[in-house]
Length: 167
Image 1 (cartoon, rainbow, N blue to C red):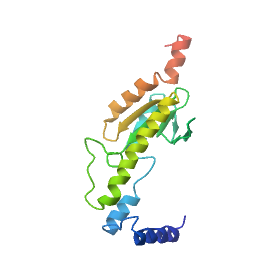
Image 2: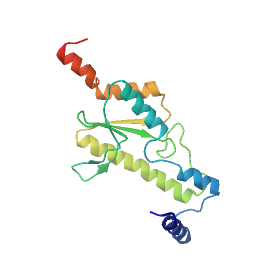
Image 3: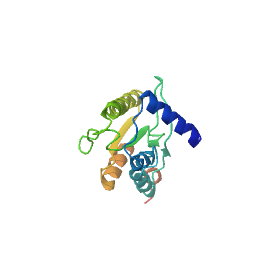
């Protein structure tokens, strides 16, 4: 989509009152810089897991039997483990999340929908036989790695050694 298209869509949304005008150009730039995937905490977790011999898919769309589509941040397909690294603001962290102070009419329902979508995805994944791991972005990396390793089990190289009896 071109910049002109997105600008005209944004103008139309402002005019219709369905999207808030930014408080400042700096705030607008900051919000546009937020990423859906490849966030710093997610990249750090993936690197740490890969260094320990774990192999996974990133941002893989899963079409579940009940019609729900889910995109976990990290997916261990063979072991059916879906890992999400949730941002404190976007997923309303009980420790760091806070109520929006401007444009509450827009942000409060949006954040509530994010949380509801998370719960729907969790339930659909579990119903399809998947294990779901949700981590907050503020969880220290060693703790996050440990939680994922516990959910997934030994890395493939470790399992190969166990099967062959190697050291």
